[in-house]
Image (cartoon, rainbow, N blue to C red):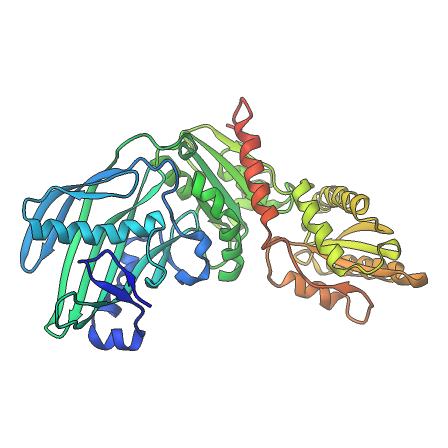
Length: 473
């Protein structure tokens, strides 16, 4: 099966990576190794991990123009390039051969932003944009010459990107075609990018999603949930902890550099009541002093730099008792249920260390429990927290309480159904099972992510904040 690739009018199909590496020795690996130096705000993630998170310009893209420099066969070319809103590329070079080469190369790259690239295009390496979407970094194809010889060639495109007013645009392309007569390499560099019109109004809204963070899989699920938000708005994600821990202040500054006129900050947390939320309010300048005092700032295990916010900022609520969360919990419970009339559903959350915050957690969780009971027809639905970051005696008391709830639910022919209220998979859902060892209960460990209702919660949070007349600061 052959498919057209818009590069030099050649025909393209998949090629084994081992054969490709044999054709271009020493070319690909140095390219990969220098990726991080070229764009420090991007991180590596396999392209195949989530096609739904590809960076696409989308409806309303105004097009752009830029200065172009091309180096090919020892010659340097300078010109201007225009990319229309539909993705058409025009390069102002008098040399027909050079112009065709530049336009065909850039058209192939632009197709990746518009979603017109061929399914047989193979992306060996991708990058992670600040909003969690995927950008192609190293793209490989096998080519057959249109000449009578029909010789097989291999090509690679090594790409770099720049963000301009909420859009990721190509900044440089290194192209190489290897064949029987050797390897042909040319480079195209774009600078002074300028959009041809105003971005859609939504692109002027910055959405900053702030999450706890964990390992790569934990973070990937957050990125997947926010991908539709990132396609519509100028977005960024900040993790407090874990493998991608960063600074909220830097994400705010990045959004402002993109020209956003306001920022909606969404805490991707279960509850408004915790030290993490206190930290976020402090870092975003929503409070003059940290509620726990200077000691909390110095003892924090993550960055506490205060952001310089120069545009209106709207601070949304955490998940709390949102109906979308209740909907997820209801579906999780029903999946484990066989006879709701005799089942007690126990919603189990992580919970904070402080007693007063724990009471607020449980109050919101019980409102979720009441919604699940009403919709699901269960015998009872109750809430509990494990508090496994608290002192040992607090953890032990929480464990005893949870086990007592299971025993009570199982009495007189009843059945206990345990549903975790956790954002993403990690250690906590495993610890819940361990705490209940020896007891009879239904449990899958399935958490909130992945689920489209989480994306709906994010969008509803943005809509709610933008409907407010006054920002948080």
